[in-house]
Structures are given as C-alpha cells and as structure tokens.
Amino acid sequence: MKEINVAVTGGAGQIAYSLLPRLISGETFGEETKVNLRLIEIPQVVDKLEGTIMELIDCGFKQTGELVATSDIREGVKDADWVLLVGSIPRGIVIDGKKIEERSDLLKINGGIFTAQGSAIGELAKSDAKILVVGNPANTNALIGKNQANNPSQKWFAMTALDANRAKAQLAAKAGVEISSVTNMAIWGNHSPTMYPDPYNAKIDGVSAVEVINDTNWIENDYLPLVQQRGKAVIDARGASSAASAANAAIDTVKAVESPTASGDCFSAAIASDGSYGVPEGLIFGYPLRTTENGEVEIIQGIEINDFAQAKIDTTTEELLSEKEAVKGLLG
Ligand code: NAD
Ligand code: LMR
View 1: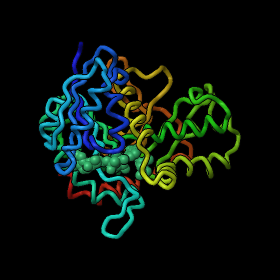
View 2 (view 1 turned 180 degrees about the horizontal axis):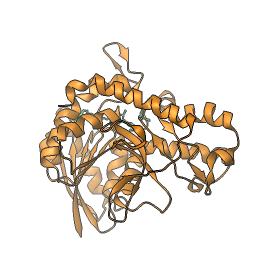
View 3 (view 1 turned 135 degrees about the vertical axis):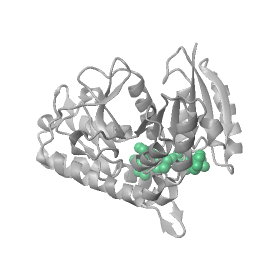
View 4 (view 1 turned 120 degrees about the vertical axis):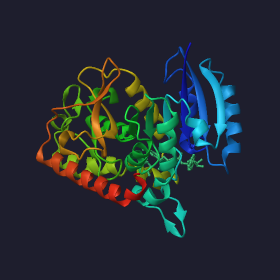
C-alpha cells in the first residue's frame, strides 16, 4: 500500500470530528493508500485527542496508518503530504464582551496562529505538500501562512468548496433538478459575504443556470445573499458554526485536487492569484479551478465576466486587499 502523511490542526474541534474518519477510510485518498494522521491541538486540549484516536482505531478502517496527537506544530507537519489547517476560533462566540459577528472580526484572533504554522510547514512539510486552510478568515489566514512558509513548490488553498456546494444546492432546488445536474460552479474571491457565486457561468444540465432559472430578480437579490450569508444562517439556527458540511467540503477539496477535473467542469477553491482576471498577484482569491491529468491545478481562463460579475469581483477584491492591509505585520 502507498502511504501518505496528513496533518490536521484543530483535531479536537467540531469540524475535525466529522472530517477525521473520512480521511482514513479510503474515501479521500483511495482504497490502496494508508494514511498516517497527525492531529495537532493547543496544549490545553491535546489530551482529548487520545479519545479521538481511540474512536479512529475503533472505526477499523484498513487504510488507517499511524495516529499521533501532538501540540507541537513542527512535529505535526514534518514530512506532511497534506496539511489541513482547521484549528482556529469560529465566529458566533463572545470574546472580551464582544460577539464575533463577521469572519473578518477573527483576523486579529486567528491570524497569529498561521505565522508559526506557516513557517513550520515551509521548513518541514514535503516540498510538494498541499495545504488547505479552513479556519476563518480562510483566505487571509492562507495568505499569512503561505507568506511565512515561503516555499513556492508547496501549494496553498483556502476553502470555498462549502460555498460552491451551497450555491449548487440552491440552484438545484430552485430549478427542481438533482444537484448533480449543476456544474461549473465558481466562487470568486473571499470566503465572506462579498464572495461571488457565479450563476451566469454555472450550468444546469449544460445550459446557463441564469437562462434555466429565468428569474434575474431571484438570482441577483435572493440567491446571492442566501449563499453569501449561509454560514451565518447556520450559526443562528444551530448555535454553532457549520461542521459536517464544512468537513464534507474539505474532503471534496482534497479529492478535487487529487484527481483530474471532469472535462468542461471546474471546482472552487481560493489560491494565490497570478494576476488572472485582473486580481492583484498574490492575493488568495477564489477562482474556478481544474486539476489536469498531470496533477497540476490551474485557474480556468477565458470565462466571460459581465458587468454585474465584474462589480462583484471588484468588491471582493477590495475586501481582500483591506484584510491584507490589516495583517501586513504578519506577512513576514
Ligand atoms: P471548534 O472551536 O469546534 O474547533 C477548533 C479547534 O481548533 C479547537 O479544538 C481549538 O482548540 C483548536 N485550535 C485553536 N487554535 C489552535 C492552534 N493554534 N493549533 C491547533 N489547534 C488549534 O471550531 P470548528 O467548528 O471546528 O471551526 C474551525 C474553524 O473553521 C473556524 O475558524 C470556523 O470559522 C472555520 N470554518 C470555515 C469554513 C469554510 O468554509 N472555510 C466552514 C466552517 C467553519
Ligand atoms: C461557514 O461558511 O459556514 C463558515 O465560514 C463559518 C462561518 O463563520 O460562517
């Protein structure tokens, strides 16, 4: 069996509880891959991971390799093929008497976590390691981590797959079709209320979703805010931030990066901009992506951007630039 090393921060958190079994079950990395899992937690919580490891053993998956719990990020990410950076504070909680309302409010609290983690990954993870940032604000945390890692052969992603799944589900429900009918779902920009889930280029059974739905008012005034604010709606309804769907989206992202994208389709994640679509180079920006047969991840070029879309892309770019400015001291 092939073996890979996967490191997960926030191993005792809500998302991890749904995520970890699926990483070692054969579902994510294949039936013939043994997964060595390193679970990383803060020192106050690391002991709880013993219970998590007991449960992972009790799942009895034949793909389960070595299971390690640590509070030492350097030990956790050494020789990692994949690093899933989930550990960070979710919004909805109260800190110093102030409720954390927006993901950007988490910048100061969570941003600092990603400096030490980024430099450990750059130094110690494999040179072709792939890193997925889930912890919010995901794009800017990835910007901090990637800058600190300073290792260009490693590939950093921030998660927008949950937004893409939400965006597909709502289009499918409106059109009365199976979710598998919805393809080409691009999330542009930030994982925040300024994200642009692109209905003009999304397709339902191969036809533009906007044409199929034939209700521009619903698309622009109901659909977009519904997707953009879905994370808050879940927090309000559940009293905790999305966990099962976030874990599912993390698995979707790993699988999308690990296997070629279906011809003509795309997947959504944020990666460092190379200037495509006029986005300043280096910003961690949500794009429509494809994984080639050679395993390269590319930004899909030539997508038509109408005036409506351009205005949305400009807004989310501005937000990411202001987040970058707010953390400039952490960029190394
Ligand atoms: P949680 O509070 O249940 O778990 C977070 C865990 O991270 C805790 O166990 C905590 O001890 C740990 N942690 C904190 N700092 C750490 C550090 N420096 N190193 C290692 N571990 C650390 O939260 P959750 O519900 O699992 O959510 C985690 C993050 O994911 C939050 O920031 C949340 O907003 C974000 N999130 C992102 C998306 C997305 O689509 N990108 C979706 C859902 C949630
Ligand atoms: C989500 O989109 O569900 C997460 O980013 C959690 C949040 O704060 O909304």
